[in-house]
Structures are given as C-alpha cells and as structure tokens.
Length: 419
Image (cartoon, rainbow, N blue to C red; front, top):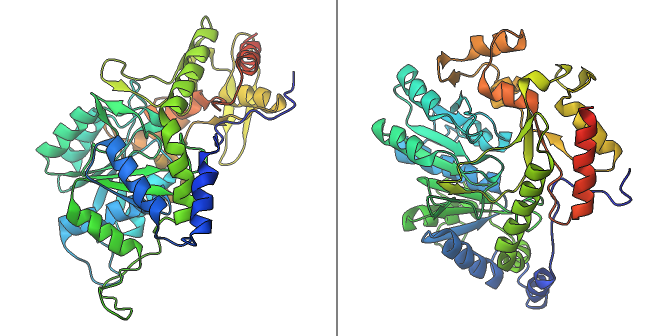
C-alpha cells in the first residue's frame, strides 16, 4: 500500500497555544531577542530540568558551542582573539551522533577523539572511555550524547571523568524530558545543552537552550550570545561574541509547546512499544535502554537487524547496494520499502570516526586504538560497535501523528522484507 499523506520520521506537532504567544510578541512589538516569551520559557525549562538557570539560544548547536567555549576557558584560561578556547587540546566525544555535537570542538580549535559505542544504550562506552584516558591521560573534557532520547550510562562515565579530573559537556539535544535515576537529562553534566529543532520532541522550528546551576556561566553565555556587548552607553566589545540569542517569536512557539512535553513523550513511547510488539518473531531488536535506571523520551524508534539475518550489502560514501535474500534483509531494503509506501525512515547516525572530515582523528574502542579495527570491519574481519550498529540499524517512522493503522501497515511492510 501507499499512504496518501506522508508518514514522517518525526514532524512538529502543534496544538494552537503556540500561535497565541507568537501573536502576543507581534502585537506588543517584541519581535527581537528580548521579551516575555523568552523570560517565561527560560523559567519553564529550568523548572522542568531542575537546574537554576536556562539561557535561550538560536539553536542547540549554539548552546553546544558556548558549552565548549566555557569548558575551554575553565580548563585553559581565556584565549587570545582567534586562538580558540581549546588551543589544540584533545576532547573525547561520543562517536555515534550528529556532527553538530562535535563541530564546536573544531570551532574552538580543539581536536575531537571519538569514543566507541556500547550495545546496551547505543551511547558512549565507559570501558572505551577509560581506555582512552590510558592512551591520552592529559585530556580534560568529554562530550556526552544521549542518542535518540536514550540516556547514557551517566554514573559510570561521571566516575571515570572525576577520576581523571575531566569536565563533561552533556548534549541532551535529543533527550529533553528523558530522565536518568530520577534526574532529568540536561542537568547531568558540567555544561548542558538541549535543542528545539523542527523535529525534536517539542519545537520552536529552531532554537536551543544552555542549562546550568552556575550564575556566572549563565551570565557569560547571555553576554557572548549577544555579541559580548559591555555595559556601556555605546557598543563596547572586549571579547569575541556571537549572534546566538533566541528570538522572542521562536520562544513563543516553544512556550506554547511546553505544556505538551509529557503528552508527546507518552505518544512516542506508545509508538516504540507498538513496534516492539508488532515486530516480535523477526530477527530484529529495538534500540535498547536501561529500564531500571532510565526513562527515555522515545524521540525516535529504531531497530537493529540480527547479524545472521543481514542480506548482502555494500555501502559507499553516498550510495549503497544490497541483494535480497529469503529470510534476510538490511536497512536500505527496509527503507526503500518504506519510501515506496510514502513513509520516512533513515539510517542511524553514521559514526563520526567514519566521516570523511574526521577520519584522521583518534578513535578508541574498549580494546584500545580503534582505527585498525574499523579497517578490519570494513574488510569483514572484525567489528567496532559503532560501525556495526550503523551497518545493521535504522530509524523507523516515529511521528506522533501516525495512526495505529498506519503503523500496522509499516510493521507488515518490514515483515515482508524478511520473506
């Protein structure tokens, strides 16, 4: 079958309250980067996450950049103009993520070293992180992601970082509303960021937030995000700044979304559970999480195909080939089937250590330097975890406006791929 109306991976779900606050910004003429919507949104998000301060910014990437700048200055002091806060220092980064997580390290003249993934949550492997500190004992900064809204093994990673006197940047862009041991993500690192991008659990079409318990850090971020203007009657600048502040209009959209966060999470969880039940008996598994210690926001439902059920496939940089085999399938075969139905899915994030732009950077597995293992994996001889999940995993249509009948049809199509 083919859906008359496209079923999206994850599209915005609007409720009507959003336009009320946007109209308020319009009618009061607060259309810039100050206004009641921004003030109220910062209060709402800080209260939800459980931190003292929230600073509304133009994007989650902006928040991550200023997290990185703050961390670099905390560790290495204020840089000279154009030097970059990290000054060539290495930074340990989650490997399986979107490149917006790690690009800020380059913005601040640092060098990302990628830490392999573990199968339990598809997040940074604490064993690989400990190994990385053995190889690079001078590293003092770790960038941690909660992939697809699933919390990482925070306590283990935090203990390792404490042991090595390292700070943590928490990229909670995908996990707003998720919790780990009863505490909200976005308040688990030394510097924290969330996103309100168009496909996130709640959205402003764009936007992000810096979250902290430090008044000093919050004030620095506010200053930097408004071009580092000093308190003078004229425009006085003593350090580099950025045009990173959130618009009061965008803040109105997110403000109108905030009351529906828990509703969206419940809808996303129902989708995940329907997939999990509907795909029983197939040689696949859903993206995992630690049910004892965490509650994801279930932003995206993903699956991974059992190794023995993978049909033959070859991937280049921008294209792929596969051969259908009875009883087997592969991510691109399933995605092609979904595309033909007018449904959107996508491969899981291609690990950063496999990206052309970062191929010369360090990559550490639980066994040590992972570059040789990546090459062996490509040759079909060995495995690094991130490359393996990328080869066998895909993101399923997870839109919370998808009907049960539509999801049933998608499940049936996936089953067809294995016949």
